[in-house]
Amino acid sequence: MRMKLRGAGVIAAAMALVLVSVGVYFGYRQVSQPGCSGEAKLNVAAASEIAPAIEKAAKAWVDGGAQADGVCVAVNVIQQEPVDVAAVVAGKHGVSLAGVGLANGTATMPDVWVPDSSTWLLRLTSAAQGFSPTNGQSIARSPVVVAMPEPVAQQIGWPQKKISWLDLLGQLTTGTTIKPGIVEPTRDAAGLSGLLALGAQAGTLGAQAPSAQTAVLRALASGKSALREDLLAKFPRSTDPASIAQALSVAPLSEEDVVQYNSAKPPIPLAALYLEPAPTSLDYPYAVMPGTDPMKAKAAEGLFRVLTAKDFKNDLGAQHLRAADGTWGDGFEAPAGAPSPAGTPQVTKSGDSGGSAAGSADPAVVDRTLATWTAVTLPARMLAVIDISGTMGGKVPSAGNATRMQLTQQAATRGLGLFSDDWAVGLWVFSTNLGGGKDYKELVPIQPVSSGRSALLGKLATIQPKKGGDTGLYDTILAAYKNVQKGWQSGRVNSIVMLTDGIGNDDPDGGISQAGLIKELNSIKDKSKPVQLIIIGLGDEVNRGPLDQITKVTGGGVFVAEDPAKIGDIFLQAISRRPNTAN
Image (tube, rainbow, N blue to C red):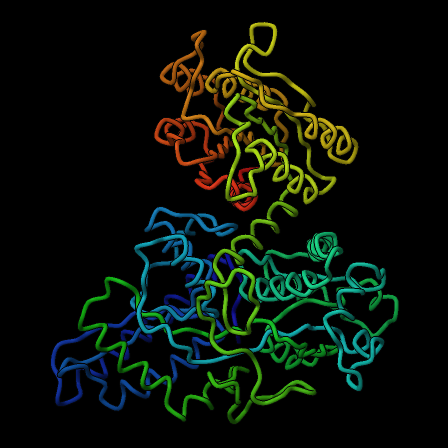
């Protein structure tokens, strides 16, 4: 039986022990084979649904005398959720992925990694320059479909009618009968694929695109689940019409999820809708990890040949998966209406940030989508602090000569439009000598967006650079930190987001020094009430060294838009990378 319970420590540990034992057994059998000596033990971490098929094929290979350049090969296959291995890789390279968090302590770095999607490799190679796995070719496929309880699907014309994305978007953004859901897309490849597909289709609606995209995000967020099992449990478990009406009615899932769910003979099966253009499929890349011992790399080549042989298609079929070419083998129970072949080609990196070609992906689009999702869905209490020093009036040629201030206002306005009414937001400005001996000024106190959105938008529109104004950065950071800490609220990410084009602290009247600021922050910070400091620097003159030292004390980070025209993307990226330390 497939296991996808992330964080189920006892079960995962027991399963890992069994699988480790299996790997040792493979090695013992191989040592007894003639024609080889020594042992190359290959550790393979695979997504839970494909691991049994890999294990079966590997055992047959080892039993038949597997070797690499005369060295006996042992294979150890371990089921590890892709998000857990991604956390290990990210931690090793000192980077973070939105929503992934820290490694859980049980996952380890394998020699070969078979996640469910190449989007994991895409996200990691984009974030960590030193991460460069080899091979990376697909060994299986599972199309991402729109899953609906059959009675719900029949109400919108399935299976006779070909359901379109526009039909679905209309139901999600204007209907009241459809109850959507999604597995957290920062941690689940099928959820990410569905989110990207829906966002791309909403983006075709012209002037209505921004509002449609936000509406889709909020609709999906209303039914999000951290675990796939939790999402599947929300589908109706009774044929009673009232139960169907109250249960989950639509979610992006993999075809394998639907087949696995229906194999348990639930009272109401799920229909799998294959919409066009198809969302990016799960493509199960075979990634040999960087730094793998050369002999193990040779063994990995041998195992890859086994996993791309014709017989492996039938092993995949028994696990409800297709071969890499989108066809299926013996034992595969296709959903009603399933085409063959089906699914998009393997994910490949695309540099076309505006493209949506099947099988290609632009890391910037993925990052922007996940950043927007996080901004919409993660409850927060935030103080926005905007630099109004004289240099903020400087023009940006790459943005049609709009000023830095105008670009900052536009980014903040778009961000505010994404924030749900659950957010609480305040607004300050800072420069030098803004009255009362202070370098900062409160325009709107932190308050619920539900009641303060108009006031925030109004004040944002009135901000102007102060002619000749300098940058009283350190005094402002300290005052802002104390303000957010004083009103700290549990259940939220309490944070300061500061936007500045200053090279650093530039306060002719003195004020606190960097060393003094760090000392003061260390003395007042409270681990039980964390406040994240996010600093967004505009321009290529930002000196991030001192800023990094400050955010190491508070938590948070420094993000620099060397081209101020790209502040919108940097703003979303910064929001999405806030550690979720809400209590």
